[in-house]
Length: 111
Image (cartoon, rainbow, N blue to C red; front, top):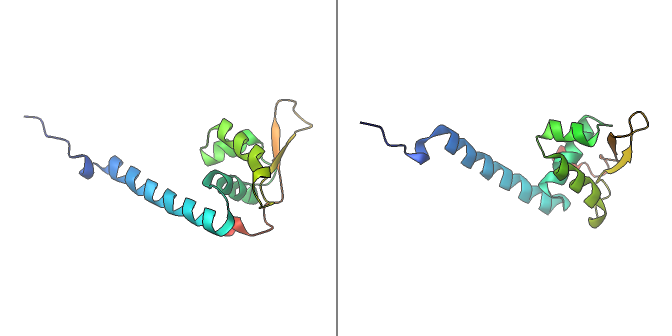
């Protein structure tokens, strides 16, 4: 006789629920304190720790989709926070885009 799967006792499911709770709490804190979405905060925090990364490298380090990183970088003008990084072409490689910005003005990456 097969054992029935009890989803709420299945460790991967419980970890998924926990990660959603933590992510939601962090997203709420970022929005209330800094007016940043979670993806914006992730990009800023990553660049504060590793300045000069390309958008692809930011995506790799944050486990974000490259399109999501590009969207986050390009949406910086819609916020009052001046910390959202802007992208620029890397002089060493035509296809590589570097992400450049002042990420420590408000200290939001330390939150």
